[in-house]
Image (tube, rainbow, N blue to C red; front, side):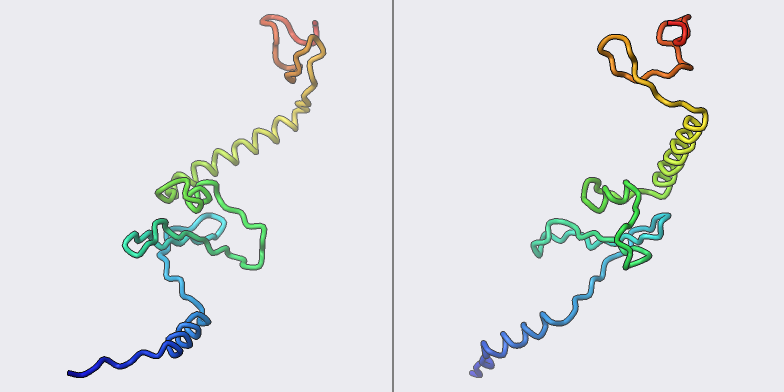
Amino acid sequence: MSQPPSRSILAMILRNFLNSLKPRQFSGTLIGKDYFGNKYYEIPANPSVGKRRASRWFDPPKKEDFMQEMPAEWEAWLRGRRKDPPTDEEVMKNLAIMQMKKKNAIEVDAKGGKMTPMTKGIETFPKRSEYETIPGRRNDKT
């Protein structure tokens, strides 16, 4: 009967220490890309080895820029608030809505739509002179 080779505890400690100094390689799958140029990756969960949550991260186009922008849909996916990654159609639809709201806000400001607080009573809801508060009566004729 042959005996198994004896294991040296000191050799195991040294080997594990040297392996811990090597940089780890993240081999995630590319899930998607957004219009800012960010790339999103995921390593799926593997409960058989004790990994209950998926690892998700992104690579920005400029690594040294700390003020990164990202769509809200992708941020929700990264933080685990949504299970499935967003589709390109969903992201582009919400981008179009966001741009339309910005355009409408610029148009309102260009018209001089300054909001003035109400002066009657305790109401503090802002009013605009171009809208009626009482049907059939303009606000400037109060």
